[in-house]
Length: 289
Image (cartoon, rainbow, N blue to C red; front, side, top):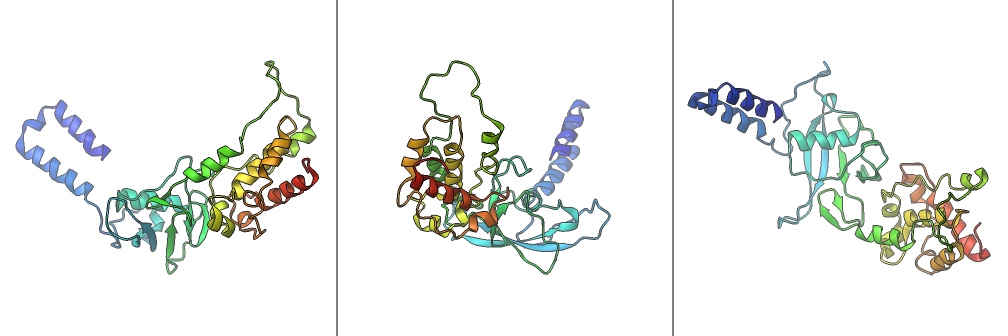
């Protein structure tokens, strides 16, 4: 699209747009460049790697609230020799070259923001960190995070998840008014936060947990409980007892059955199940463990 706009600009500066033949030619070229490739068809590929085209089928979950059609998987053929190595690159290629209506979240493409969390080949992960299976006989399957309300295509409603995160008050709480000085924390106390603060709230763990599937309205889930323990164990916080008391609930905390899907799928390599077990111990002891 940008080259076409540049051409328009150059011709306008040269006064050539006043000629009907030139204008008609440009309109025809623009229409052809914007024409979508039918789903399932192999788009015209222009190799930039010098490798021959290698087409692979990807089935992507599609649903639009603006249509009466039921949710379905649509097949797309992608030349993986003329595409980036990650699944996010595949989604971009499909959106850019075959179907511009495809919707998905993305931002950093470095595994930091957690926006592109989805279910790829049956496992929750981040599209930007998931490598493309280069076996052309394997059919890739991309779906939204399971057991979440779908907004459109691969975009899910995260409102309940964020509301649960907000409920644990994920910020430092002090009983005395701040005096403008930093709060001291020893190296040993700081080390206790490792494996907790790195959570990017992608919800891969929570949406892979059967307990969260069944009780997502009451059970806080692995991601939120991991964040809750991060503040319980923080030596600078003054509301530790109140935080522990808030989590002492049959549904908020004790729906965890240590299935451990959370630790299996976490793209950051964290272990929410371990943090949940420590919260249970803290509730029993009445102090952080």
